[in-house]
Length: 485
Image 1: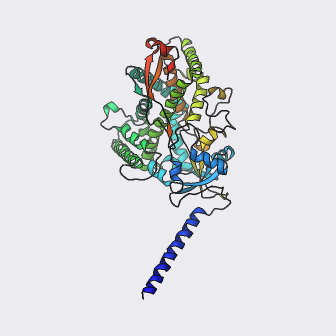
Image 2: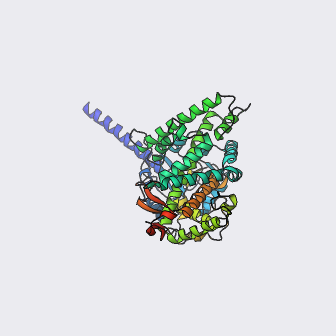
Image 3: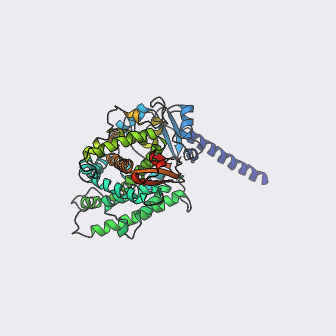
């Protein structure tokens, strides 16, 4: 009897081991309609997620990507956050993927990212619905409204914020810029003013951002859990605001939120409450965080490159000299004349690489049909075969280049194809306006911090604390060098 029990136990154990081996084999040898690129899927379920999220304290391509590029070439397969993906650092394939949006490829993100941004977020919508939402957003962020309204509002916000910061011993620049941009865009989007609201909406977005690109474990105490709670609380505020406005039939349209509510009140609305709320959430996040990171890095790079700062200052001082009223606000003509500033902005976002990966899914019968594809902008932006000395901050490399109005094979900081970022012009206006007011009115020096880390998104873990001086009051040591690090 005992021998039969032992045989049965061994048989069950053997069957379980074989089942695990077969499952692990299927995991590491996935099916595809064609030939998959080389690479490794790592451990079952976990994949290579831990390596993907490993910190990188430089502006260079992450060790995760760089090691695999050296081993497998510009296109390789891997598995992150539970999904198998093809990673592309090949400029031609990247451009092809963007140009074939809606034909051979469509926007796609792993389930964990979809949970973070909402099932009905604009990045997960396709076809008519995506184009419909894009048209609505361009009412706010398009060049016509930028020229007529947003440029003046942005200029006023930059002037007031810089003057306030200069009255303090120091400011943590990333947080200060984030607050400035959030208050500006939240007022335009939802008429939100922190001083008049009982809800600290930005606090919820800060919690959301801290865990945005983190290992997806939703357990109290983890960054991912904090991220999800931040989203939950922010959505609660937005949902309450929307329902109050929907109940007020006589309300006049004041902001972009009202535009979305009017769309829902149509006889045959195509927009649901869920889509409207997810759109507002994404716009509030995208409007301030990405630009604030790029601007903070830009100030750091200017502090480290006095030759660039000098050329930039000369351009903006010339704009001031050519005005009848030196204290007048920026005009659209002023903005369009900022040639070197435009080069500085392009070089800053090339090095910032705010978005470590752009996801698409193959639809048609190509070699990896059904697989996710992660376009890797940093690997292109930092490729020495494309950019000489790619880690150098060299705005002059953009001299005489045609103005970039969409993604190219060599530059995709704002995406590409049909999904080229609709907020690109606003981001550029924000950066140019801030730079104008900073270099014409102030000198600054770094007090502490400024170190960066990528996990894989860009952050300043110990902050970047600076002290600002009106130029006429700056110490000689700061005036002589324009900035002191």
